[in-house]
Amino acid sequence: MQLDFPSVFVKRGEIVFSHGNYLGLPTEYLKPKSKQILGDYFLELLGGEAKKEVVIGVDPLGFNYVTYDFLCYVGLVIEAEAEKKAQYNKFRKKYPDHKFNKEYIKKRIIAEYKLLNYQEYVPVDIVTQNLHELRGLNGKISAHIDELMKINDESLWEEKFDLSPENYKKIYVASRFIKFILDNTKFYIPNFFENLIIKQDGKFVAHRSISKIIKIYRNDFKLDKATIAFEGTSFQELKGEKEYFEILIKILIENALKFSIEPERLNPKVTVRQNNKHLIIEVHSYGYLIPIIERKHLFTKGFRSETTKKMKEGTGFGLYNSKQLVEKFNGTIEYSPKAISKIGEEEIGWNIFVLTFSI
Picture (spheres, one colour):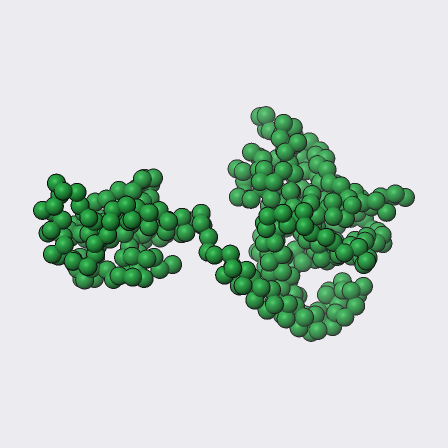
């Protein structure tokens, strides 16, 4: 990312000098003998403990710099207070074009720091436009790979997929994951679920959709991917849009994989069964159980359990999104853990999420 003004920042332990969009680095900074001195100086300055306030200093070549955490604007002449007028005049003669108000520079460096750390974002219309183009491009890829695999009948998907060449499978899986990622961005739109209306004029076989998502994850590119077990059979149809149901299953499988502590030995598992009144789907994963005191918050937007925080980073939206989607299919979701052992105060066992749909 090109910052506004000449700057220095630390990237993977290395010092990076940037000319900036508006002004260039001081010519003295570009001399080989100066770069070594400056590199050592700024690596020590920016590589230490992060400073959460703006600090103004003078570098070894006599130029002003402004730092905030790991980011630093360099080669700047700050409009000095009256008592520093003599020093200011010296800097002004050396580099006359770089004169900025101190408060302005403070605001700029904090604003750009937030941009670099995704605390503030690119304008929404730019993001939306790019997502729309990605969605269209990915749709064309998906259509072509379906044609190559000769998948023109959803009921024959599994048979056609299993018989396809490995390269075709990988392209299909990649296109589906891209679609999932693009779809997932919609869920962060304010009031998305309140305004979502799922069409009820179509039907799909739930078992078939679950099997598809499991096969997609089994053919993922990850070298350490776990095998997901699938048990049970049902030909029960559900009303609604199949795509949203598949996203629901994808969220829960991803959640199970993410928080399993021994996924290669104790595979995550999906089961499906039905009785006269209900279709019941369960997603199992072996790991730390959610403490009882936290369970009432499990499906709250943004909530993250202490047991999951220490394992993987997350947003706290997965289970919230799954609950919103389940309800769009007139179903319910509940957490039904099964304890196996205990380490200190923490229980370990099967985290089980149960989806129930009326039929």
